[in-house]
Length: 128
Image (cartoon, rainbow, N blue to C red; front, side, top):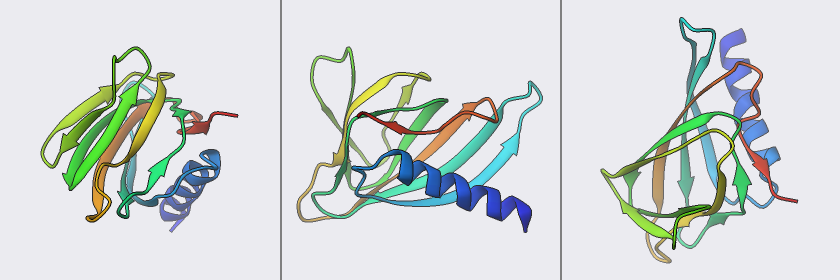
């Protein structure tokens, strides 16, 4: 029960930290790792045309597109890229995520996000 409360709190914190977010976040698990870090898995779903505002993550993130198409751009990349179901990317902790959202205005999209970082890491902080 406590574990589920912690995961629910993390999902709420993810959305609260990204005030401009227009997404549904569903916690999938949080597990301690041998090196003292924590793995946190969640899904992010966007309705057609939805997106999140620019933000940073306090932990490294591996992202795998489950369905639809996700538009993403991390600072330093020349332009946003559209990732289709089955494709993935990596974001180092602290990277500035400039673009994140559904590339389609007619179909939903979802992704699995797996964070690895210190237990106290703030998973998402929206730009001010």
